[in-house]
Amino acid sequence: MKRYYCEFCQCSFPDNKTNRQRHMEGGNHQLNRRLHYDSFKDPAQLIEEYCAKPPCRRFFTQGQCPYSLQCRYSHVSFDPTGRPIYPHELKELLDAIARPASPTKEKVKVERVRLPRGWRLRDLPPSLIPPKRPYDLRDVATWGE
Ligand SMILES: [Zn+2]
Ligand SMILES: [Zn+2]
Image (cartoon, rainbow, N blue to C red; front, side, top):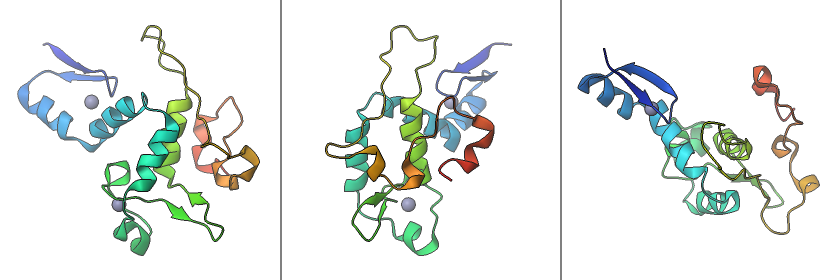
């Protein structure tokens, strides 16, 4: 049977209308697609756009929001000195951008995360300091500790 290969998710499944529709509507697929397109953006611009959204009431009252990056509202909070604290999904996105593009794509420019103008690495809260390479992917939960 023919299989459908989703480039965004790098997975395949038996190709029929139901499967395809279910896949396209899945949150995982939408996030991967979003990550894909966002990876062409400048991280500084991405952060700016993200911070420009109005604050998410659900995130700030309940401490979490199921919409994650898909949320129309911002999950960025600010510490007492006014520095932004990014939600983990935004950090993951920035990290995904920083990671070299997959080798199957030809000649994709490798972009590193750049801090907004005037920021220094040592000014970042510990949770935002990039982990040392090579990344230990088995241990993502401890990043930033
Ligand atoms: Zn997909
Ligand atoms: Zn939200």
